[in-house]
Every structure is written in C-alpha cells, then in structure tokens.
Length: 435
Image: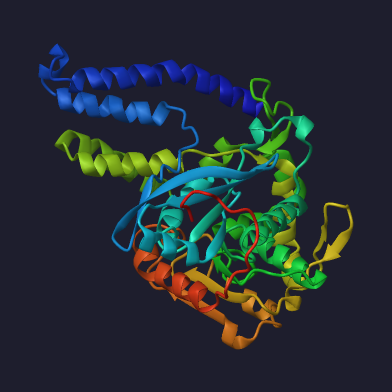
C-alpha cells in the first residue's frame, strides 16, 4: 500500500506545486502588480522553493549538443543502438565537416560507459560523457525505470545485467574490432563478472577496463551504505523496501524497490547538507544571484530524478555483493542466456588492462573496495594494471565536476590511449562524415 499512498500524495501535491510556480512568476514579473508589493522578491523566492519541493522530477535529458575537440565544435547526435527490455545502449555519435578533425575522430578509441543501476538515471554521468567525447567514441548503458516495463517483458536479475553488458561489448566489438569499458560505482561488480566470463570462454575481451568507486570487496572500509546491506537480512529488505507498481504505470504489478524510497535514503544520509542547500537557493533568489540559483536547479533536477529497480535484481545484488561477497570468495555462478551456470573467475582475465580509481573521501564505496580488483585479476600482468586515488574527492567527484575533469580524466584518457591497439576493420560504415 505504501506505493499507492505515495502516488496519492504526489497527485495531491501536484496542483499546489503548479500554483506555487505560477505565484512565484507573478511576484517576479515586473508587469505584475504583485511584483511591486513589499517583500515581493522574498515571496517569489519562497514560492519558487515550494514549487521545487513539491514538484515531480522526470528523467532528465543528456542534452549534449556539441563538444569541443581541439578547438573545433563537433556536433553530437544521440541515438539508441540497442533497445533491450530493461536497458538501452545509447551512442553519442560525433559529426564534423572539418577533414582534419574528422580524421582524428575516426582514429580515437571506443569506450562503453556502464552507468549505475542504483537509483539515479544514467544522465548522472552527463559530465563524464561530455568530457570523454573530446577524445573517444562513447556509448553508455541507459537503464530503464522498472515501473515503465510491462510484466510481459519478463523478469530482470543480476545475471541479466551481466549478460546485457556482454551483449553490448560484443555489439561494439562487431562494429570496431574491440573497445574499452568504464564502469562507475555499482556496475564495477557485474562488469568484472562479464569480462571474466568472456575470458573464461576464450572470447575477445575489452582492451582495457576502468573501474571507478565500486564495491568490488565491500568488506574493506565499509561505509554507512555497506553497513545497512550487511546488517539487515535478506528477508528484511524483501519485506520493508519491496512494493508492487501501481496500476497507473505500464509496469503495474511488477515488484520493485521504488525510487521514492531510494531518494529518501539518499537525503537521510546527509539531511543537514540538503536543508542548507535549499536555504541557500532561497537566499540566492532573494539576492538575484541567478547563476547560483540555476546551479542548484540543475543539480537537484538530476538528484531528485530517480527510477524504480526491479526487485529480483536489487535483492540479488544485496546478497551477492554485500552479504555473501561471492565475487571475492570465488563462489559466484552466473546463468548465461541459455540458462547454464558459469563460475565467475577474474583470474582468467589476461589481456584486458586494468585501471581502478578511488576517491580519498568516498562515503559510498570506501577506501580499498575498488582497488581490490587487482588482487582478483591475478592473470593480468602488473605492467598493465594501475590504481589511482583522487585526493580530496568524494564519490561524485571522481566522475563529475572539477576534480573529474582536471585530475581523473587525464589519467583515464592516457591509460586508454596507452592500451589501445589498432582496431580491426569491419562492421557497417556510414556514408556520412561521422565518428
């Protein structure tokens, strides 16, 4: 019933949020009599804040139209390459009419960014994608909101996540010969499993994999997030955070971990920070600091947009990663699309170069959790492995913001470049000048 109660509350709040927005505009419009009343600016700021606190946040756009490549603006066309029931493989195709720029674009490495399926949309990695596009052909996994997936599309398990990643890698390999893979936070574990299984079968594995801020070994420096998963039983999660999607969504009846519960958990981790941020937004509006107010809007438009996760996937992730530590214990079996169980053996990876990235102040994936991947991948030569700790960076700082752009990205770019090899010809070619 909790999901239904939330939907009822959201429907009740929607007209008041719309009214607050209209009232804020009335107090701000110089042609409105209300704008000339005492404290009009304060009233406008108050109603604008009420609107943002009460509105519903939908999935944002990536909105990347152009990027600068060596001083030349390159057009970006975003398109879906593969459409799976629970995920889209999205490509950011680059176009240029400048022959020299086009030559550079075509010769640059191909990178698959595996975005987290842990509450927020893939657009959380917008800054990651925009920065990577300067020197790489970029694909990203865009996970779907489970409440929008009809029951007829079937179930979604952690095994399916691993199989999706392998399918996406093979698709890009077919196009270009091979690729590099970057995983941010939650997907470090299933990505490592995907590459391990490919190596065990004798398949061609990615040229390199970059793993950033993920719980490869959640036993190391456990955070508040880890402790919750470790201290609560499997049945506790099933009975306290899993609900069925209401009838007003395409996925009606599907068991999910609702986005609104996840969002409440995000806020509860640091409520004082969020309260202060909203108060600062109010103050910025009063002072007419439009730049700071807009920065607040952009951040919370992304932060407040959350998706539902399929219950099977979520519960299996809790058990496999945070309770049984199946990856580090060598006891994880993944079912392939044919239903056959295969053991995950990271030690079988030999040709994929390995870069791990951690933030010094990461409060989501603690120190050492990502670095543990190097101990598991004993088959990769030491000269093809590297670890980088970002001083002063928290969890989001390793893939978004100034530290990502100035410190982390050069390390990632150079690592990929150092372990890139000439790509095989093949796959379909476009008649247009694109890369």
